[in-house]
Amino acid sequence: MAVLTKEQLADPSRYNFAEAEVDLHEIGGSIKLKALSLEERLALPSMLDGDGEYKPTLAKLAASFAAMVSQPKLTVKEAEGFLGKLPTTAYDRIQAKFAEMLGTEEERRATVKEFPSTDN
Image (cartoon, rainbow, N blue to C red):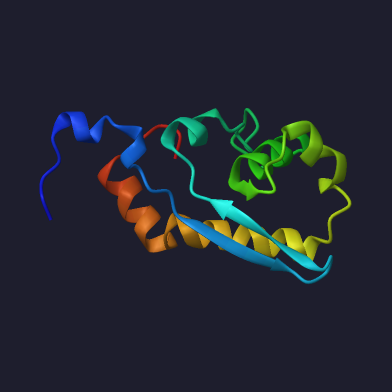
């Protein structure tokens, strides 16, 4: 594989984001997820409170949901309107598929170890 030039690396039209389809048999269809850009990921709200405790809210989950779903395209407000009523089995499957797209827990730990941050 050829080494990219800095112009090629900076050209977003070359980027290919992974996608995955998730069957939502509970509601008779499917949705498509997409991998996020670093900019999109950094824009997501933290699920941790000031003490570092995991404290998700519907608004924060809706923001994440809207960011990761590529089809149908949703706004955060639209996702907030139905997400709380979505069967948890469907939501958990969506989250699991998205986590799978991000890599294994072992890969995540290796990355955190290689690139330590105060956020981890």
